[in-house]
Amino acid sequence: MVTVAIVSPSLFKQQFLQTALRQVEGIEANAAFSNWEEAIVTVDAFLYAPCEEWEHMDVAGVPRHTVFVLERHQQVVDSERTVFWQTANAKALTKDLAAKLLPCGKRDEAPLQPLGEVVAIGASSGGPLALTHVLTKLPSDFSAPIVIAQHMPAGFTKSLAARLDRLCRIHVKEASHGEALLAGTAYIAPGGAQLELNKRGARLYAHISPAGKHDLYHPSVSLLFQSTIACTTKTLVVLTGMGNDGSKVLEMVKQSGGCEILAESEKSAAIFGMPKAAIASNQVDTVMDKDEIGRYLAKKDKREGGFYA
Image (tube, rainbow, N blue to C red; front, side):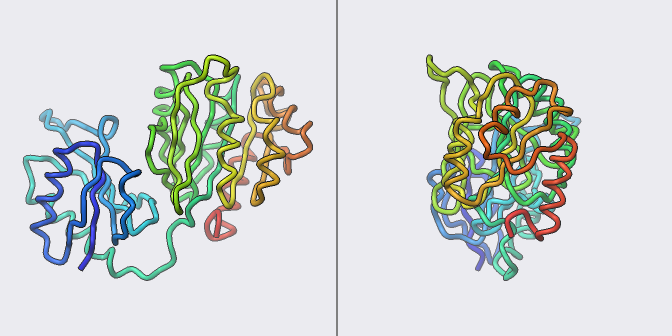
């Protein structure tokens, strides 16, 4: 018997998926939750049905929904296990869910992602181009989530994420409050807000909060970097930008262990302020061009059989 839990902010989707699962022999729908914070259960797989940006219309204008099948507790989207469905075709959904879910209870291989590990990137002026150079070098099966603080006002980061998503093999999106972080996905902090990481058990979650009136930077690279301290292994990357955001917390994060820090070179950076301040902290392990940073992360991921194997 394969045990399954449903996670969706939509009560309609929860009920629709529960009805579909009841038609599949060998699958037990354990429970349904509105968010990942509530979904602290032991099951073989999760069905994650998000809203908003994952909704699509077919040529007839009928909503086409997305459901991610996440095995066990790994919180890793396997693209081959993504299910697209329409409410008008419940039989097809039931058939697809059976095909995707029934193997989940039979898998004994190593986990797809050791959780609680992360790559964190900070950037300011010139950041969108630098991020393009770095993220386009990463493979679709990159084995860690990536979190990004790019200095931008509210309203601009969503379009930046959409553009990068079209260019990259990994998935790129604007981070949403409370969502579980998935390997092979880059999360950009919403402009004008703060992104920090919450680690609960083996899982990482995005915590979005309004910028304080005394916050100099929003998003803040320092706040994001500092929130990685609870992670067993983290790689911090300081890209182009004015000022010194991120540099003052590097020593603290380094002392927490399992931390590698990369900084963009003066030759490569559009503005060398942030990388220069990071290098001056004497905590940076390697200085390299933005293209080299992306290739380095990809090669390390491949060489070690998974970024944090």
